[in-house]
Every structure is written in structure tokens, then in C-alpha cells.
Image (tube, rainbow, N blue to C red; front, side):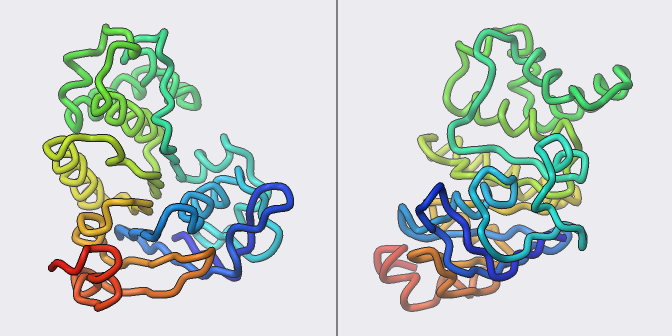
Length: 236
């Protein structure tokens, strides 16, 4: 699936990532945690060719993604939901989803996919004729993820999806992420909510100062002394 080797990248003259190695396998949730400024978001932006990659290899299903444009990455099966929950506020919920299906020529197929999205996010069906401007933070996040799912990705990359959500909505969101994995979608998630991200992940990477300093499997990662002390406040 996704394989990153020796990645160095950043923005203009600033190097953020210093030679990281990371892998996401089929039907797997991989969490990337770490302090603010560690470079977590830059990993995802490097895969999507938004950050400036200066060295290393990024491949998806054994094919290099380094020179692919956004629409080509989407066609390959990679989707990205960024931290800003970018939606088109002056369009309705339905119109936002239709924009996500620009690459789908068969309109009946697009309609079928949108109905599948409504099953995952029933609230979007309830709000389908409402302008996106009036959505709550949780509804905006659901719309952003729903729009990304329109392209039927094999890999979904989520940047801080639970940021600013209530505890109830966070739980609902993480439940949906686990359900997406069961439906065959691999997920790379960047999260500040370290405990919950680790709990749902098959594997977790800890990123500090642009380097992977720790890797672990499943909930056993929660028992690591450094993780407990620094990221879980000594709990768990």
C-alpha cells in the first residue's frame, strides 16, 4: 500500500522531516502522534505533494507518487482530508458531495455513491439541501470526510479529524473510522488525541522533531512508559 522511505521534506528552506520511514498496509489503521510542530501534518502533505520533498521515496501500491498531481493521486486511490475542514460554504451539502465526484463521469454511479455516503453519515442526508455555511463543526467534518470518500479511496489520510469536536462527536467519528477500515479502506490518521488514536490503530508511530522515535502495535503502545508519561499524563 503506502510506503515512505528516507523522507526529507518541508516548506521552502525549512526542513521539517528528517529521513522518516513509515508504512501503511492494506485494511490497516496507522496513527501518527506527537507534539505540535513535530511534522505530523507534513507527512501527509508530502504524500499529497503539497510539502516540498527534497529526498526519499514515497510509493503507493509500488508506484512512485512523487510527480503525481492531485487528480492523479485521487485516481490512484488516495484521499486527503486536511485539518481545516475545507468545504464550499456557499454550496449545499449535496452540491459539496457532487464536487467530490467530479472525476466520476457516470452520474447514476455518482448518485449511488452519494447514497452510500448518506448511510455512513445520516446527518448529511438530513442536511443535503442546506448550505454548508450553516453546518456545525462536527457536520462540517463529516461532510469533508464524506466528500473524500466519493472517490472510493483505497487510502484515506485524515489530519486532526477530531480537533474541536465534542466528546460525543469524537466517539462517533472514531467509530466511523473503524467502520471504514472494516469496509476495506486503509487509514493514516494524524491525531492530537493520542489515547483514542492509539486505541483504534493497528500500528502507531511517534514523531518528534521530524523523526520517528517510536513504533508500536495496537493497544500495547499505550503501555509504553514514555507514551504514558508524556502523552497520556501518566494515566492508563
